[in-house]
Image 1 (cartoon, rainbow, N blue to C red):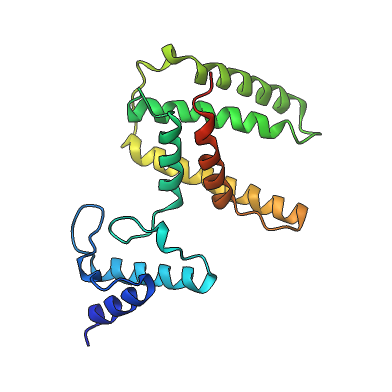
Image 2 (cartoon, rainbow, N blue to C red):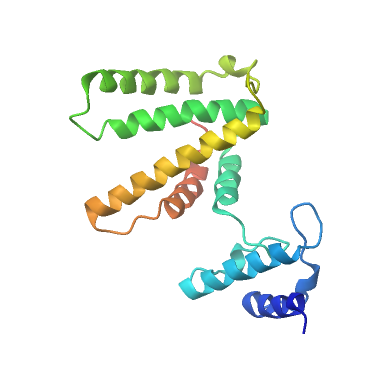
Length: 197
């Protein structure tokens, strides 16, 4: 049995489907051997952790990423409606500023000048996010290279900070806090709230 056939056999067992050879990647192409190995490894780990739920698989039988679950919930809530992807991205920067300012309110003893800056960030970000007239002319920009690559780098940096903050909360409470799971739950419950008026 070839390595690919063995991976297909294991994948079939994991997801309870027979025709796994037809699984395609996001571009509609057959999975490479490396992609297939990664998929089987990830699903095996999820199964071992008790976290594999077949309903979480999309039409290609590839697990939906938490990022996709949150994005779909945000779209269902109505926050994507009427915005280009670049405008939506720019507004999310304002939203991040608002959330950072709100988080800072729950920690006392910060340097005074930082508290003033965070309060201003919260107020300015909230006002900007809620004003649709401010986002008509936003565009990607970078003087030294590809703006998308720079944005991806900064988003990864922010995610590292969020994961570290979540780990610190776990140390404080001595309780498990899965920030990814919490984000998916929050996005799903926010659908009913709709767009902030």
